[in-house]
Length: 270
Image 1 (cartoon, one colour):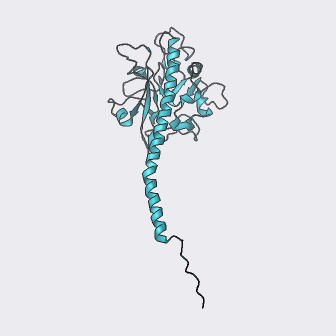
Image 2 (cartoon, rainbow, N blue to C red; image 1 turned 45 degrees about the vertical axis):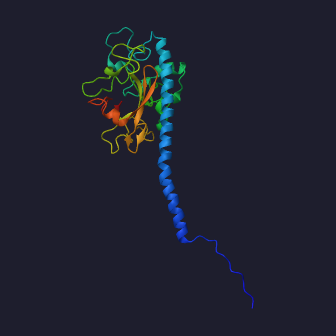
Image 3 (cartoon, helix red, strand yellow; image 1 turned 135 degrees about the horizontal axis):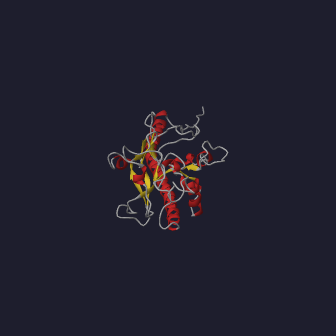
């Protein structure tokens, strides 16, 4: 009688497989938040780089204009004739505070900016032709023929957001920055001039994460740029002296009472 040698089984048991799956799940639960946080930090850094480039172009533009930022009410940026006292708000192209004169963007690009720096990489899909060319007369997909572009940042240069209103009795003009050399009431290191989009449609189910206003196509997601879940994480602020600083949402919300914002529908915080 012959006997076959005993074979050792190399298959995993069900318990062993479950243990391995549990270990993988635990590692994923530990690593995924860290990876998400690293991605958020990278987006914030990339956004800060964009704003820094915008700041350099603004300084060049101002240096060619007696150290003053352009007033968007006046030609060639708006419709008012240079020298007109107290130009009306409707002499400004655009409505919301992320709208900016197309002539202004042309000048900024001549001074070293590129189209991509006008959009936050945290909401990169906003950088598309239907947004960039939205209000440019003659553009193939233009909805409004009035010489402005929608950007991914909120502007605090003279005239920007002039038609959008403000917080309570505070007008947009309160926040405009003009002289890059500063003044007793306007120190360049304290004066915001371009800030991240933190916006809300207060009638929407998730007001910060998605709103649909102003005639843009439904596939263009309008939202706060940097999100933490469905809430704002905060935003980068560019100051007149060229430095960029991150500001948490909690700081923005409690910065002053009432909160600083433009518009009502949607509302842009900064």
